[in-house]
Length: 64
Picture (cartoon, rainbow, N blue to C red):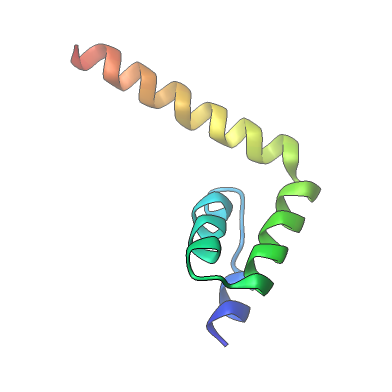
């Protein structure tokens, strides 16, 4: 039940976190859905990750 709810809530912003949790808890159905989601949306997922990483680097550089 919980796996199904998480599967239906996958989006670009949370797929990597949910996939990591699925792996940690051996949630095979959720892992499969997460990997399928990334495969279907690879450019958007990578762009989101790149944008987040760029913002983090910028924040760290201003704090230094």
